[in-house]
Length: 183
Image 1 (cartoon, rainbow, N blue to C red):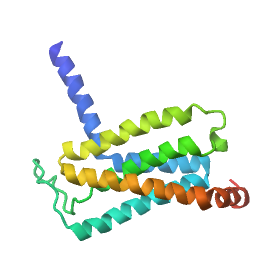
Image 2: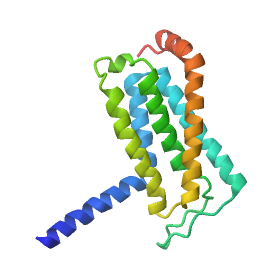
Image 3: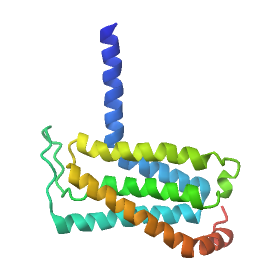
């Protein structure tokens, strides 16, 4: 019985580790599904912000040129630079922007009957984002400072990008949805 429990725990741990390794695919797929489901200009704006956040971090990596930590497993060493962590930057952007959207944006027509999402979505996204950021250290892809700088970058970009939507996108986004997104 003890061996069976160990095997299940090992399988669960392996699945969790693979899930954390593939967060890029998971987050991209969930974002694409959300765009297709809502057909919302606000979600497209949010997604473009995540891409901008990622691209800025990639430029920063070329400036800092700080190597990643040496990975303990052979063949698992990533070849690009590590400072700052792109995963940490983008996932913190997702978490902060989602919190701001839940607090300040009107509920999209796709979710009219689901006001509970304003509370539940951040309760899922924030712990998930924190787990992903910490996993970058645990998986041996980044150092603590690389993750912290990446996380801080997302914390700065998200409110700035959200402010752009509040100032300009809310008005023009509704117009674009009404006029051009006839799906």
